[in-house]
Every structure is written in C-alpha cells, then in structure tokens.
Amino acid sequence: MRIARSHSSSLRIGMVCFSTLGGSGVVASEIGAALGRRGHRVCFLSDKPPVRLDLSGPNVSFCEVPLLDYPLLAQRSYALALTAKMIEVARTEELDLFHVHYAIPHAVGAYLARQVLGKRAPKTITTLHGTDVTLVGADPKFQPLVRFVVGASDAITAPSHYLAEAAHTHLGLSRDVAIEVIPNFVDTRRFSPPASENARGGSHGNRPRVLTHVSSFRPLKRVEDVVRVFAVIASEFPARLDLVGDGPERPRIEALVHVLNLDSRVRFLGERSQLVDLLQESDVFLFPSQSESFGLAALEAMACGVPVVASAVGGIAEVVRHGEAGFLAAVGDVAAMAGHVRRLLTDDELHARLSRRARELAETRFPTEPAVDRYEAAYRRVLGDGLPRASSSSRPRSS
Image (cartoon, rainbow, N blue to C red; front, side, top):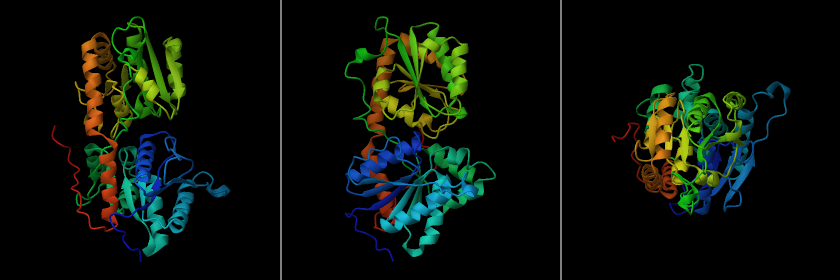
C-alpha cells in the first residue's frame, strides 16, 4: 500500500499532455518546469516532447509514447499506447500521481492504468482545458465517457469559472463534484514589454503598425476575422499582420489573403515556440475566437504590454478586462473589432494606458508561483498529506 509522503518531501509526478503548440501543452510544460525547480520529479508523457518543454531544467524528463505497430490499430492506437506507457512509467518511476491535461484521451488513459495497477496506482488530477468540455464533452456520443473519466478523477481543475460551469452543464457532472478554478499563468520575467517603448505603439514615423494573432488555425479560432479586421486597418495605415501557428484552416486563410491582395503585408510564421520577440514588436493582439476557455495567448500578449482586441466569449472576459487591457466585441463583429484597433492606433495616450494596464494585470492576477502553489496543494490533498481542502467554485465571480 502506498504511504503518503510528508509535506516537505518531493513528489513523483506523471505529467500527461499533448505535444502540439496549444494552451494545454504550454500550461502543462510550465507547471512541470516550476515543480522541477522545487525539487519534485516530473516525467512528461506524450508522443514527442511538448513544444514549450525545456528538458534542460532540473528534475524534468520525457517518456515517449510510441505508437503501436499493429495494422488493425494504426489509426487509433495512441490512447492504448498511452495507457500502456502510463502503466509502465507508474511502476518504474514509482509515481505518486498523474496530472492529466485534457480529458480525452488522457483522463481515459489514467483511468485504465489505475484499473491495471490496483492499490498501487497513482492518484489522478484532471485539468480541463476547453474543447474537451465544450466540443468533445458536449457531443452526445462522447459525453458519457468524458463525464465518467473526469468524475473518476481524485481532483478536477479548470482555468476559468466559465469552464468550470461549462463542465457541470455540458458533461452533466453532479454539483457535488468539485472543480477547483486555478487560472492559467504567465512567466512575466520572460514575457515582458520591450526595453524601449519606441519599438511599438502610436505614431512612430512611418513604421508599420503590427497586428499579431496566435492560434491553432481551427475554425473556432476565426482566423478569417483576423484577416478581415486587418484588411480594414491596412486600407488606412501602413500595417503588417503576423499570423503565428498552423492548422486545418491555413490553406483557406492563405487563399483569402491572396484574394484581398494582402500577400506583401501578411506574414505566415508557422508554429513557433518562442513568441516574446514577436509580441514585443506588436501594437495590437487580435483574438476573435468563437469559443475560449481562458485565452493564454492573449495573456502572454498582455504580459508583453500588448493591448488585446478579442471576442467577448467564454473565459476571455476573465482575462481581458474591457477598456483596461484591451477591448471586447461580439463574435464575428469585424467592424467593431476594426474600430477598437483603429482607436488604439490613433490615440497614443489610450494605447500607452492600456499597454501599462495589460502588463499590470498580467503581473498581479496571473503570476506563475501562486498558481503552481495551488497545484502543489491539490497534489498534497489527494495524497492525504493532511492539508486543508481549498475552496472550489464553479460559479463566476462577480465583477
């Protein structure tokens, strides 16, 4: 039988996440790196090292999940391979717990692994990230499975009050199932404004204004709206649009840019693990998503002092305060978003004020260490280390 370790002892954690450049993998990588610096041993399990994971840091390792070389399973082997690897790593590393990011397939793998491991199985904490609830979890075909494996976790977290409420609603989780809201966070030492404010903002000669967007180029990210907002701005100012990321919508967006005759003014930069230099050159960050559980990309822009123009959906309003860190508009309202961008580019005082406030909010509301403290406290609770249970809530806070 597993013996609970003392509060001061290090933990052995299996961090399970996607390797692609999305919010869940970024958050998992940052949590793992911070825990490693605190002396905990963290083993990442994925098909390849997550894009933002720094394996040079202390106490962090990577365990590759190899796909099964069986023809009958070739298309759907990852969940099975992941489960098998979780069982193996739990035994060889004597893990205390799994921290799984995104419900399917990771929480499924954790549940199956625990059935195999029995009494010696690690505990499981599941962090929900967005479409695992609002898209996959809301699909009637998958809802029973997602509800079951999430509910079987020893603890559940979500990055926003919006997503915690959505999990109860879309998954049909009992209100007795606690979901602790631990907001995502940003390393404000790394993500910081440029040393010289002359690098951006306002009327600095003939320097083109720079608009930036970062996403996975999926339909719900509404990258077409980004381009159409930019088309309005580009007709009025010397301007450039930096599109960072890749995904299924990219060919269509490239075609739209060509049709609008913006090829020379739009840069498709692909996936990039390092964003600070691009954000430090940016005047405005565009984020017109149809759905967002939090908006980590917007937070990283805010930390660099970049005002955000975004959709007023999901958890974005918990990150981007309208009129403080940027402006919000209805989904699909290209005219309103273009108007907000125009205001920021023509009013130097407004841009400077929102830039300072965006940075201030990132520093004061979303720092790294308090968030990691809360994850570590959650680990200790499920391991029975005797720490008081943190209050949890799925109700949005009053503004």
